[in-house]
Image 1 (cartoon, rainbow, N blue to C red):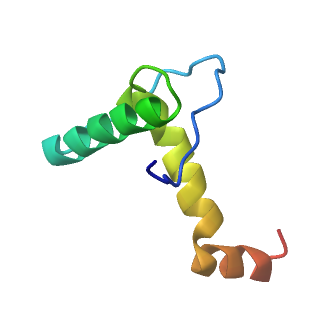
Image 2 (cartoon, one colour; image 1 turned 45 degrees about the vertical axis):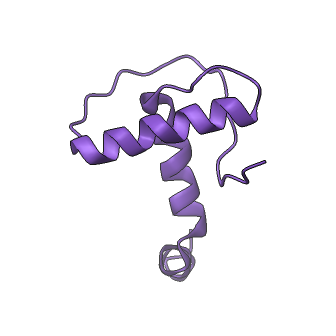
Image 3 (spheres, helix red, strand yellow; image 1 turned 30 degrees about the vertical axis):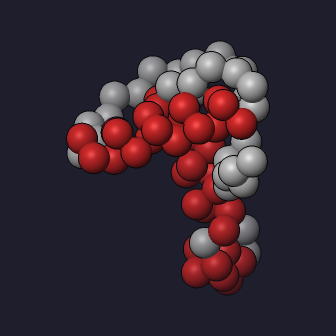
Length: 74
């Protein structure tokens, strides 16, 4: 079984977001969603549903950001 960094996104009320992605990134996100869905025994996860978890994970694991945020007293 593949160990992915993301879990399935929570089923929350969607917010409309318009963003342009390079085609190669979209292909990778599509494949990631397919693999994520397979590992969870579900169908593919749409790339748009991966954006928030990816960004949350990035922010949560960015040590430079955490250090800068902590330095600002947040």
